Length: 439
Ligand code: AOF
Ligand code: ZN
Image 1 (cartoon, rainbow, N blue to C red):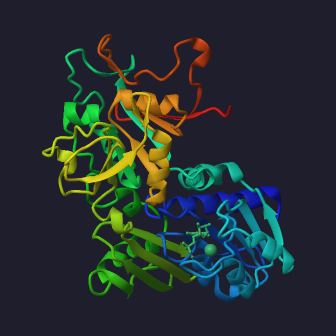
Image 2 (cartoon, protein in one colour; image 1 turned 60 degrees about the vertical axis):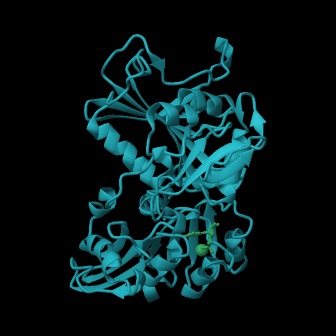
């Protein structure tokens, strides 16, 4: 296998991993491609939900005997522990894989060690292949494990001159419907949506992700097996959507198809399909209908940063559409009937590092920060914004509210440098993804 071939197979594994994005929390996204001894693709898989089979196990099951003497490409070092499932290092050994190619080492001390065990047992291990792309694909989880805090995406929508509201406070629909739909997609994939009390008082937002299907999953995939898998998981689970379902029709592209759907408490429309055509005439596909975890059934956790507990009991953010946590200062007395998270004060607000650590302790891997230039400024000042997603409308205001409040950069030498990683258009608007440059 040449380095270029290794990179190409790993690129496919990264692509597979991305299908789990938004449904694996608090676990990583992981993709795996298994080649047979002749270098032909024999199995593909990804991790679809926490507690479900690991990517390696899915791909090995698909490959069957063809894995013997073959190569496995995994975006994350195979685990060496028995957690919710057994060690993938042993699964790879049992399958007789001769070589394992890894993109990123597992920073989770409980699970790491797969590479060492495989090497010790005579398997050739190559690490670091396409590491940057795999890191990017797993950035939320890697931040959560490495730093012990939730990963933060700050999103804002503004005019081309960086204004998020007019002078009189009006702010509705600066950006297009397409851009707003994209925001909902990002919200759905996050574990928590965070807003400041200023936004809650000014706009009374509901902070929910619009429910319904995940069009990005339904439309995705190249084989018939994938589409079928997605539908099945939701439809065939026993009881209250909990169980394993098997259905025909998946893998319809190939002469011989096997379809599997695992409905793990799936709410209709929230399914992830998995499938690959493994060799000519033999289609194998897996469908996993995934409920996104106990806390996720009704959408991401809503978090209000509200030091003095000023959230009105009638605020829409306290409705029953999703769970809500009100973060208040530990010295604040309140009789607000809501789940409260008490945190130390810091500057004029709360200790935001503590907030992100507490959220991580509650299995919140990814935070979507919206609402409030003041709060966003505090996050930026503390170096707690890991990714910025900006929607810029081709419009000018010239006065009004800046998208970002004071961020601790009173002099130009202190400005927060970012790097543009993605630039695209969405409807009439510009969509930019930027990340801090390493310091
Ligand atoms: C996954 N999916 O495909 C791989 C993982 O909660 P458990 O017992 O399933 O174990 C999760 C850990 O296993 C996870 O934190 C990571 O370190 C390792 N690898 N995890 O969820 C996968 N390969
Ligand atoms: Zn594993």
